[in-house]
Length: 336
Image 1 (tube, one colour):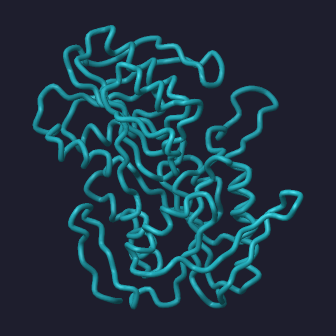
Image 2: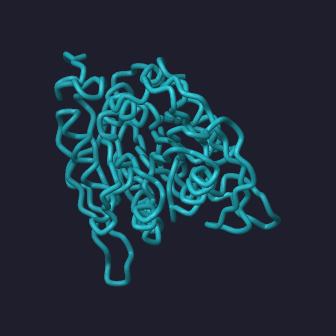
């Protein structure tokens, strides 16, 4: 293996391209900028691939370099437009399978269709499993994802899944701001399902934990039932895996402030940001919104309260470790 060195800002290892012989990184149209940043961190170029559409909207993929015998990594979050990006991923997988790639790893910084991971009501689909089945049947031999909506999604695959976590990046941001030295900081989970994620961040920041118990009358609507934990007079860091319309985070922040919190900061891994979510948060009581760049953020969604953190060093380190047959779980050994 080639010589490695630690990235000064992130602590992730970077490596010269000579250690990555036999590996190629390709990207679809979902987040090409992130793919370029990952390639830069790896010291390689993004592979040549053309994705166009026929007149009727069907996606046409042309791989413009040899993939035979190579470890192929496809970076493609299935974010909006989710259907186009998912279909493009499936077609890319088929192209590389037919091109005799040795291994095909799907790098999905954001796993779309992951919110329906179990049946709650009769006759509901389990779309998270459906996507997993299509990915496997299309030729993937491995999957890498960041902060799946539910960790059980890993079990929907019969191939290896490397589940990466965004909270260490978010936590380091708050540590650099001095939050670990403050006594009035608490980490808040906006719902019971996110307690594990919030607990890990609280441990990293040496902070207490607060949980909001809420219910959803229908999709994208939320009601706060109760708040468990000590948050009065404290700076509350509310963490979620994604922010979609912003309703859940805003309602939670309002409930915290109305009941005595000093400040509420929101953070998430995936900036889905539908329906002017960032502008709603900009106008809310939330003082800062921190997210990763797993999903591209439109220019019109950028607001003064928004802070975007890079995920490319983490993804690049995971790709390097997979290609070099090294442990991926060691990336999070200090914060498990």
